[in-house]
Length: 115
Image 1 (cartoon, rainbow, N blue to C red):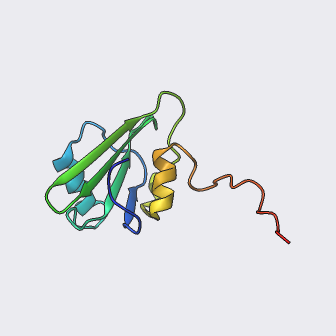
Image 2: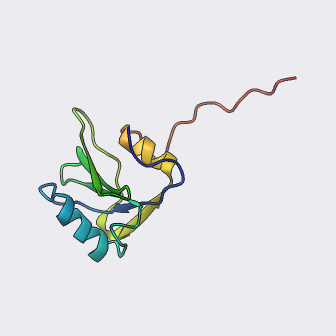
Image 3: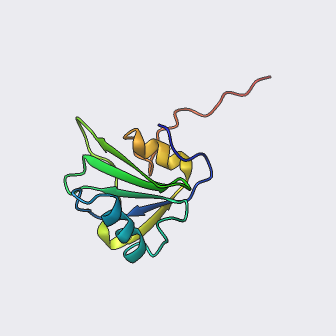
């Protein structure tokens, strides 16, 4: 995915968002619901009601970028609306974008000791 690098702040709008909203509507949600300036350089993530769609909004310094992904199968893992706002790391954002449950990643077995 072309977009923000590592170390970026990521905010998830918990619960469902109307996916008909464009850049302007999502920027307003970032300010009113998430309490953040939309042009701060952070990534704002929004998920649709059915759970198979996610939009990311990001200000790159020149304008807004909006990334939109629809899963063919499955749902994006997402906190409930009662959680309000959730912060993610850039690694968790990458997992989310790939449809991996960022809350419980399966890391496999620990590395073997060399020696």
